[in-house]
Length: 87
Image 1: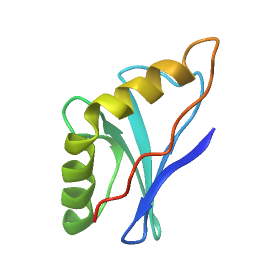
Image 2: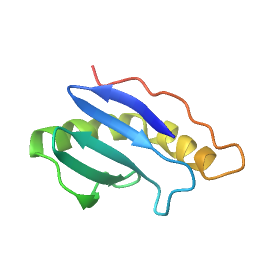
Image 3: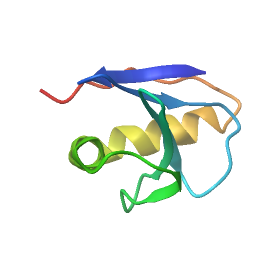
């Protein structure tokens, strides 16, 4: 699908029919990472520590919205909602 949020140069994305565990994709400059929604841990890739902390704080605040988006994108609905950026 696409971009669900953007803050401090960090792009957060989700895609339809993506694999478990529930996760989202992060792009920051040349870095790429998959972040597990429940734990905030990196499943794949890497991020600088400062940006990882921003992403983890944001994900913790918006955990329910992230899980809802992941579930909708992996159902027949295949839709998502934008999520407020970290401020």
